[in-house]
Image 1: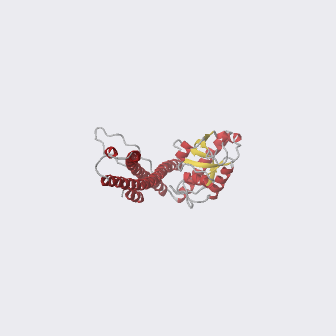
Image 2 (image 1 turned 90 degrees about the vertical axis):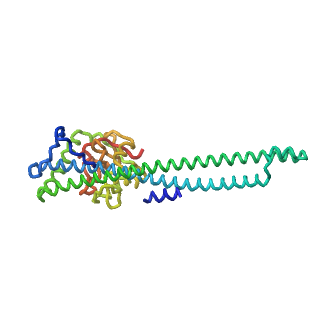
Image 3 (image 1 turned 90 degrees about the horizontal axis):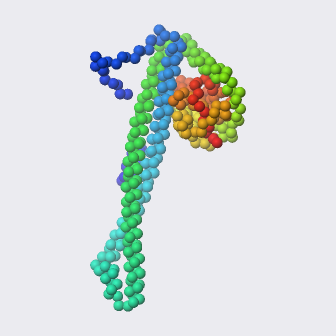
Length: 346
């Protein structure tokens, strides 16, 4: 029943109150209406909102991956419980059979029965049987105790995994709300702009990216980068570039839509290498390399919180899934603030 319940179970912004008048905290200044601000200010605000949504997307992906892992562990524990319970039933049946046999043999202990033997041969044969019987009984009781400890351990493990699963479900729900709120805020700001302003806003985004890329290239960094892609790296690049033009959707990992780390993780999986799902875990777990040692197929991690990732394809360019409302595309590797570089393969 425990196992069945576990398997079925798997299938299965707090607003602060107003402060007192005498000690009310100063309110943060509200953003000026779009009409009173330059388009550059609006661009920076929208960029900040999408950055927050992307960070929340990473948190959502991490919580989802953890929940899936814990669900698999609960299923495995449930199967272990079933097997242990079957083993316990067999041992109990053996113990019952042993008790019934002893009852039928009479109430005298084995030692007393040995004293009543008439022939020496019978005595030694009986002693040997009695010793074996005692060993068998001891072994049976040890196996029963061990199996019971296994069952207790499985129950504790299942409870712990269930607790973690619930925690990650809550984290996932909170991240999902954060994503939706930030995307709604960005859409609200964009909706106040006229068509001509939206077109100019897109031009400003592209211009900011070009300037950042020019500064990066102007540092001479590309002169130091001459690594060649590995065999697996070429496969990962081929997969990623084949997805160009497909929409960005937060939490997506193909085949029709992707988010930034969904694209990079699936590209390397297609190359035969499983890597962490999120950009933050890719930054934390994968080997890091200096930018001058970078080679095509490596992953460039962006922003201080490691909330964005792109795959370096050579000649100072990356392929990446930028943000909601955009498609998988090629971009300058230095068009965003680089945190560092990691290498999925050896």
